[in-house]
Image (cartoon, rainbow, N blue to C red; front, side, top):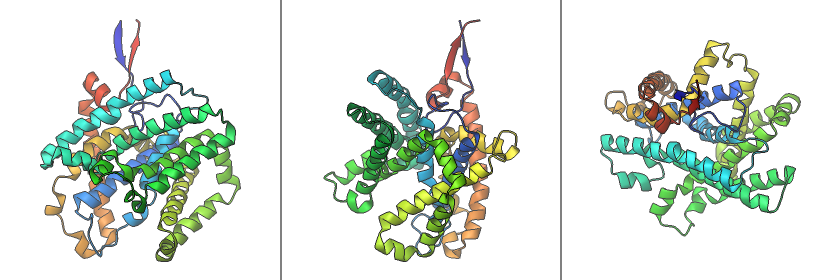
Length: 368
């Protein structure tokens, strides 16, 4: 009996090709686009040192409204499988497979990163950002919540739209109780809130939204084609941003929720409209899909390039206050960071064990 490594899709949401959903090419390309946005924001914020810069106008004020919501949306989207039985055995098997890719592997990269950067490991673990590696830990928590909520809902034998509405309502509940003003009221220490990542749990709503839209994807596509949904989202996203101060004065939580959802829908609609461009038959599509299949690799590796003291040798863009120049330089650097991350990924994947343990590359057995 021999061993063969199957070159499955590897992504940040599952550590391998999702067994729970059929691939949709433009969704894979959209995941690649979202990964580019994440690296772009890290290059600007951490690489160029613009995080916390006062009096500086950045394009990330707009991109940030839907960047992470979109990432978590796709995570939920690719997880969902109609009719999958989240019984105890299946749930345990699923979570056991995720521990390596979502917890152990990121922890090793985190330790290496903080050692190189001269940071304290314990301080990094209790910090909400986890030295940048918070996403995979938070996503594992979402898997726990999702399977637990499914088990509780199934006790009441809820079906159809009633179940969907309840799940989305629970997701909204997570969003409401984890906004900054509510987190301060939690009866937990600041260190414990940071370790658990309380402030990041609000994205669970978008994760849950992804699972529900995947379930009713044909209806969602019809809504994009035959309803004013896109027009409404465009009006909401740009209208809310134009009247940002006024809307946030009324409800900052509502502002962020509506701009996130509307921005998310606009991006999905765009990629669906241009699905031929983002297919495997087109060069652009192949590039975006490849990045989408390597989101985990890029996410884990790119910090080693981002935190390479860029701001010490580059101009202070906070002084220039030019979003265009910031975007242009950040985009160029992002291309290099992603390219070098993929090269390192390729080298690490040459070893079957490392490919499996670090990035979840599936190992399949076959008989000659």
